[in-house]
Image 1 (tube, rainbow, N blue to C red):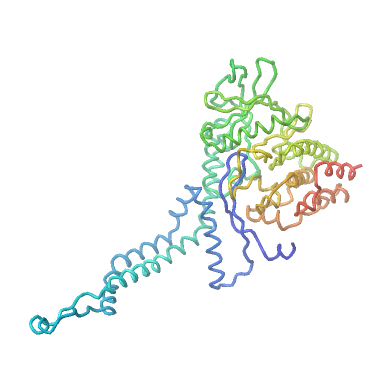
Image 2: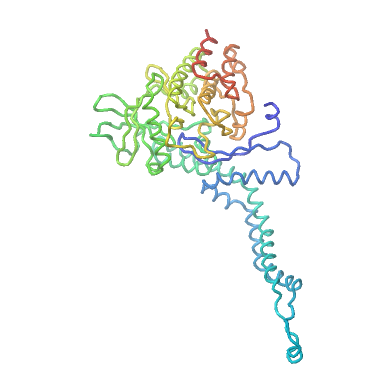
Length: 488
């Protein structure tokens, strides 16, 4: 593992898009750190760049940016076309005539005497001319193709910069126009190979869920007999807007999550929205948000669920930094209990992070957002190369595309605990560096950042963050027991 860390690094951003909290798409490759200028290394870099093309094809805006900003490739193409169209055909014609001159026709003696020798075109001349022309066109366009491949990392970087500009605009509109804000996030995702990273702000690179203070354009009531009253928007993400509302039949407050209108016709997103409802509906646990209903109103899907008014764990960490150890362990054990309940029913969350832990009015933590969940029986299948999760909290097996199971959630829960204890995640940096650290770099013991963390708790947390799933705790029950023993 140490040797791998020293010799390899994950290459620049790659992959394709997810939306909302669905995840992101990325291709993985490792490149050698040495930089000799050899033909082999140049070919390897070009091959690595070409490996990004299948993911880029799913990003038309990024493809357009790539083609329109590759200035050197454009110049090479222009020069090549001038030479190939105007100079090459006559030059090759002269060469072909010299190499394959006309041949004499077969004539009898009388024809030769009275008509002289007649010639005809060499039958190989036209064949060879076309072969030469094809070869010259291939050679002539090769510099253009090479320069175009070399420009891929540059276009990815330009796309990321433009996406960040769109994200800032989206953040400014999030409180007044959640629908338009989401469209800007979608546009940003179309310019980046990592959709989750595109949705991240400079202050919180793991997730954007904006707090909205004013109502969005939405029906005032939804459901059969207008049962649910929609009051005000309280949050928005990549898949939809969350509103505070009221169940007028049972006279209780509810949260209403609406799938964005521009995603309604997207089969995959609609099915994932349904999947979240199905996952939550099958789980009844004190530390998992409760779902009440799934409805369709005027072509829009809505999830009706428990309204949690205590804020998120991300908000708590942001305002307080590191939390008291006792509270950290209480929250972690509570969420681990909810996860254990889900795991026993064949559901892996795949996106554990502070933003997805909300508190009730009395401070009880509850796990939310099962839009990324892996169900034992699901009609939605993750596309090849599509990886689910948030980069800062993603397990090594999610990064390298290996099969995942409940131990993935234990790793992400460990990252969450680490952030609660220290105020920081263990790994930070640009996307490529961040993902490489999950796979290769051992985390600093949390006691180095928070001296009140005991050696026993260090051991438990580092076990949760083991690179190999087999080296972690094998269930959330084991994790809870270890945490309680370390803090007894």
